[in-house]
Image (cartoon, rainbow, N blue to C red; front, side, top):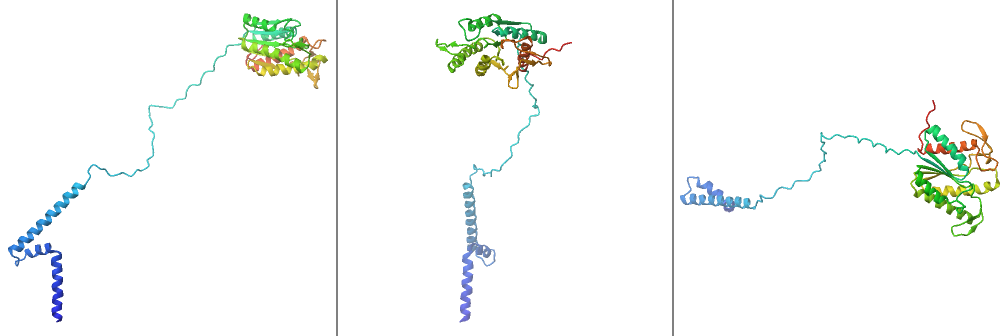
Length: 319
């Protein structure tokens, strides 16, 4: 009984192996002497069928291939290199030449009688130290910006600048303006009051606008200096403040203060030393007009400012 079961098991295994790989079995068996011609033909047919199937699978895979597509390349960061052109060399641009400024050659000095003494000293200093002889003084005794009905400095200034055509003008008013005034509306204003200051500022502003509009390159407005007279001591500071404030509104105009020029210990000093150390009286008895010594000191102050502003070159050296 056991032998029969073993035989059945062996037979089942053999059949399973043969049926599971029939083509290989027939191919191997067909090469033995026991195979008949029918078995050999069947083995040959199975071999051909297998080959055809492999061929069909091959061409099917060939057709599925997309020859137009290209494999995606992984983007890799690359460092950008700047190409250097050996023909180009870095060259520095030549420095721009400074624009040449036309020299200031013509000087005009205008004002009341105080300008006669000061202007004369300015003329001497410019000719002696800077070789400038083209200067002119235009003054009027007892005049100013207050009594335009007596002397119209607006009209006169417009005329003389048109005729003389100066590069620089030096202005000095105020000595005769310390009196009551009629404003542009014809209203009477008592000297020193706020209304008077407003009216006088309007006169100064009108004159400054005139100078700014006329073809003059630079204007120096000279302030009033200290005095021993109570009237001037009271009014000159407020007038100087007006001159200074109005000048700030016009780039062409520079205010030059002389208030501390004749001062010592916060008060008027009648005797002052000049640049060389020489001492002398600076004003005459009226407390307004300069002595020769005083006009020389104020003239030096103005000329030094002109040099600082490059209106004048450095003074020529004496042999």
